[in-house]
Image (cartoon, rainbow, N blue to C red; front, top):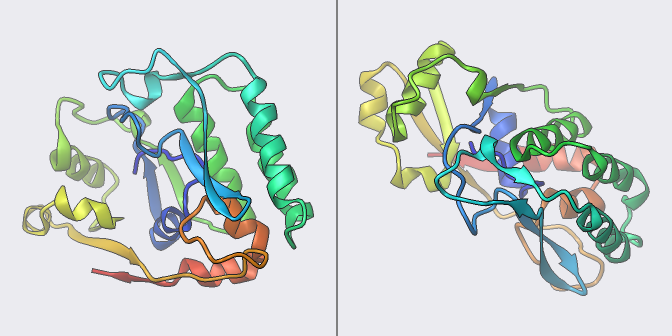
Length: 227
């Protein structure tokens, strides 16, 4: 999967469901996607936050994109998170983790996000091995599902699980011909109390962590169907 910044819980369901998770950093950056942005709860509504980037282009791979050198965005994000969640039940436990992630002095977008994913996995006791796609020796001229199959073969995988959006990209029969089963994670509805507001689903993992203890989140991680 492409590296997404503090993504929704479905992303972590995927990480938790597999033995090896590959951060797909050597694929083209997608503008207006979820690589460098997500939503948190602000005044009872979803609020979009993002990492500002330098010289963004869809002709560059994710690991060729750098973060804006002006660090004011870090202060602004932390201030917004503090104001929005300081009364949340697990703010005291969770905010230092988010602060540590945001404070990382790393300009490379892919490395910055990978670090954040590992930190969240550590907090949630997700023990999945995390690999970086660009560090795997493979034929980088391959595209689409052919490149995914190549990565699976290099890691001796006999099963590949992708997010539900991948159903439009990957063909189960093609994978089976290569000796690899293909499934997709479909997250079940997840509900929890967000102060006294009407519940807004699928916000950043920040929101889930602020309102739920790790053991409850661990339970959420298994609430999906494989199709």
